[in-house]
Image (tube, rainbow, N blue to C red; front, side):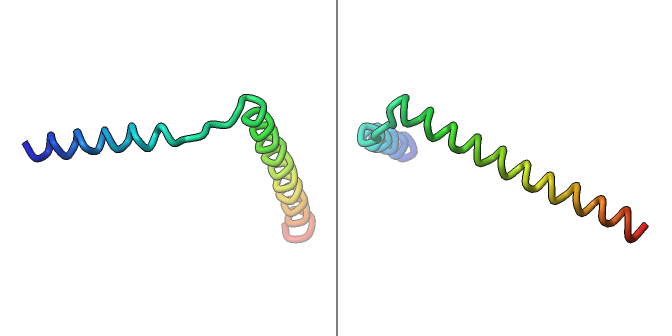
Length: 63
């Protein structure tokens, strides 16, 4: 019975805390998502370029 009482209290506290959440507007969420995607693409391109350059150098000078 103690487990049920503890679970009930936990769920009540979760509901109380969930009411305090301030969700971003759609405009803010879209803007932030675009920023994350652009930064990810730039980072991927940079790392891909470094990988390609290092692979080329290793093939030219080591192998």
